[in-house]
Image 1 (cartoon, helix red, strand yellow):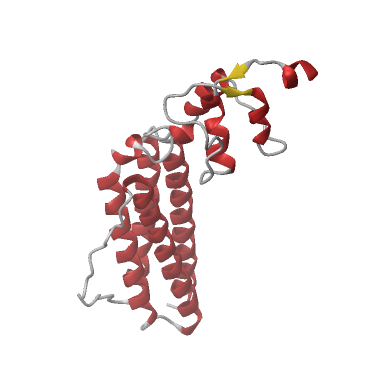
Image 2 (cartoon, rainbow, N blue to C red):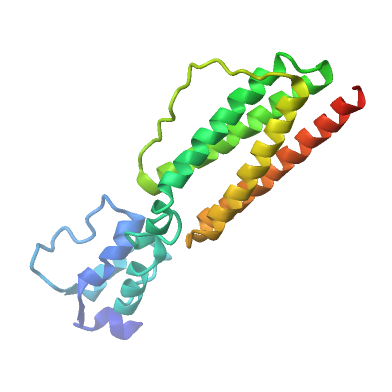
Length: 215
């Protein structure tokens, strides 16, 4: 240590720029050093904050290669962007299912109304998840189409039958989309949405079973 303190050896201050960018980005560590100079006395390096270790050139290169520093991240990057059209289709489908389920509440038996509201809320939450994914991929907000068309439900049991098939088909389509992407994070989310739609289908089936018992 004594050798370093009294030695006339000098260091390239640019090796330490990366440290200062992390701990004090607005502070100039070497105000007396002008652009073009390459070395400062070793005693000046003592100005580094306590507990901060210098990075070797190899460590600097390593940090620049971390996934977070890449222009195209491993998750929700270019591989996910290839699925944008599919994802927007899913968003519109989820919002359409939500509208349909809320319309069914008006003619549902009293015991089924809260179940339908819960299912509608779940569909809306899934649409929001997909819109968040869209933003992660593109950096832009997705604006879903707004439908003012009145939803026609029809008779109760046939409506339940239709909603069951819609939920089951959505679940299958999510699973297929998950198999069709190489983005690991997107595949994970799509499989979760698939499982959610299968749960919705099971709930609708139970509601249909109860309704048919009274016929």
